Image 1 (tube, rainbow, N blue to C red):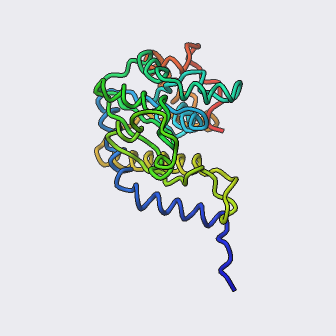
Image 2 (cartoon, helix red, strand yellow):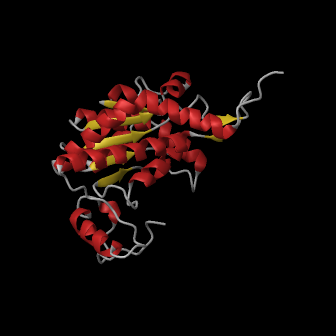
Length: 255
């Protein structure tokens, strides 16, 4: 009897293990880079397009997440109100550079760019422009997906990053059924796991060095609003996406 196809959950766990094996060292390096940046008073600029914007949301104004984070994005790459347009904009040269010019990152800031393929002009330009400004770049991408993707820029996202976290996402993203994958994309699962591992490593390293990280607290636990109000006051001038309200959290974050 032939071996039964591996179940979908098993294949996801295998990819998570693969990510751990391939990117474990890079995760520690990324944590150290971020701690150096934040410890020196920097902001972490985070970018992505299309469904990679889910990872930008995961990094920003998130319970347990870093407060020193600014989302760097162009409304045109959001697929929710015009999906076809978002694909065109991600492929349009110049948009990524303009986004960075508006954000104007500078050392000791850092940048994290999420893109599974890392081959479209938008994420490539963001990483390249940040690096040209002396901003250290972390790429969260998939080497094998990148190798199989259509090349729409002369370079790749990974080419402009100091640290590359390889998410191990397969070409085409989908994972099911095993013999001819056509559904169940895994890029968000793997990239979110990689980012959570970075946060855990960052926490350990900060504790080791005696550094207090600026972290959001769930607005749904006692004392959370007070902690977050102080962080809003600290960062809202440097992170305009936090809003310019009255300083009181509205309880949306933290789930």
